[in-house]
Length: 190
Image (cartoon, rainbow, N blue to C red; front, side, top):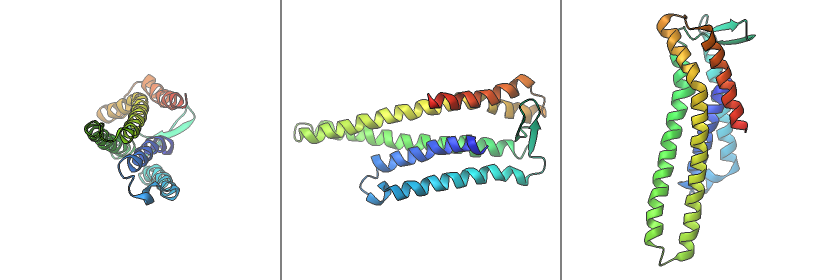
């Protein structure tokens, strides 16, 4: 759970960093290395707290003999919604909101650059280059989000299935959920 939340919260930190550089660039203290190290520290702190929380719930984890691993019980009513919301939904929503803000800013600066293009040609070229960079980065992050979403979908289906039918999901779905997360993480490295 720490590794999955580490990946999703890492994307959140990248989005926040991109927000600092593209919208709040006039606040120089947000662009410093120290702020980014603090963000990384808090990301790992949050990930470990998320991973430790299910330990406080009785029978929160189960051992999967075939995979020789321990995982969260997906049919436990208090843990499944917690892990879905905290690990998947919350970071995704914030990343989408942050990139919507960046996209809105890029859209607004495109209009400003077009209106001032005749007056200050070089400044508009620099601005358009910056806008193109933001759009490329946004496209890459959205691709990463889609890869992770495809990898996490079988796990989410498994949790919902276990909640509805009290742990009667097919064994193949357990295998698929674990392997899809690993495959999605591997695709990120490529």
